[in-house]
Length: 369
Ligand SMILES: Nc1nc2c(ncn2[C@@H]2O[C@H](COP(=O)(O)OP(=O)(O)OP(=O)(O)O)[C@@H](O)[C@H]2O)c(=O)[nH]1
Image 1: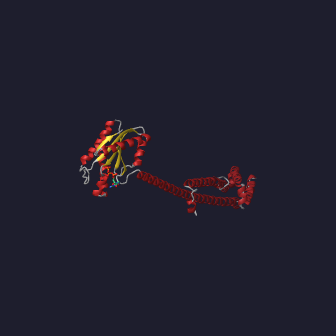
Image 2 (image 1 turned 90 degrees about the horizontal axis):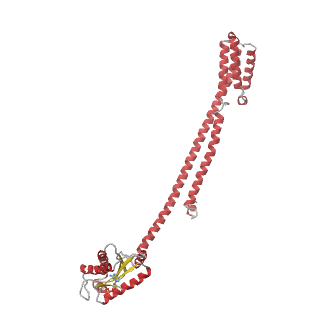
Image 3 (image 1 turned 180 degrees about the horizontal axis):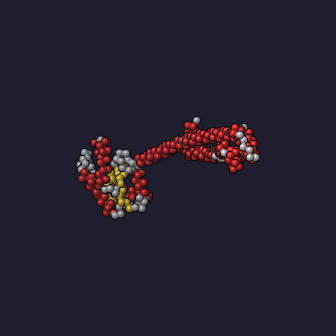
């Protein structure tokens, strides 16, 4: 089902990222809401004086009082009785707590015993040892019981708090892990889309480059020449149109594969003759064009002469040249300022110059107009 959802276009990686972010916020909010009441519960139940601490203090006062009465008893005189009475009074007030009264059945009878004892001491009567032990030991036992129970309750609350903390930690951990994994999935989806888009762009660029290239020789084609002229708008350029003489006869004599080889060799030869600044194009068949920076007619003429001379020097055999020569070239050149309309005129001018060379016997160059 999730796969089906993911396949739907409108659940893009952005939506999914938003969802994971929302999930994270919800998790944090939930955990924040939990922490405060839980901590509050922990401290209110186990950390105040109504817990075991009052019972402990009360028991200590009663034990001290018992000690005074047993050791000094009647011989200690009024001072001993007063000290014992004072401790019983304080022990009583610490014992007389609503929580103890309601939760521990031994509290009320113990308080009554302490009350009776206190009255007797106030009247200067010290009960017999056996009676005294009963009157004080019973409340002390009750207080010990309260202490133990309060400690147990405290331990229980602590254990629950620890267990809850552990549970919430696990929830946060698992939640974070899930969100992290979701993030990875979203990132992967995004990355996949980006790669596909990159590949599509690369392929488009590749095919665009291929569309501008002559597959046989690797140089640009007619469209590339137009694009480059437009890109060089306003610059002074020289345009050379270069054509092999009697290429048909060459093909007929040696076959098309040899003709292809000659075309490729010609590209390398022109390249060397014109140097690195020139750009070469194949117009079709055995006709090539060259563009070069040219702000001086002399530069143009030197370029034309260099190409023709390079072919002569290469002395590539032409078995069926009507003039009995090696392979020769005819070149027409023109100088112009790069511009869409100017280029059409310049091309026609160079073509006419080339035609004149052909008409005058080939193996040469001319420039126009
Ligand atoms: N090998 C080969 N030949 C091609 C290719 N494209 C065109 N040709 C041949 O090039 C020849 C061009 O012939 P023409 O236009 O008469 O030119 P030419 O024989 O050089 O004559 P001139 O230019 O007047 O000297 C034709 O025979 C075409 O078949 C190619 O890609 N490879």
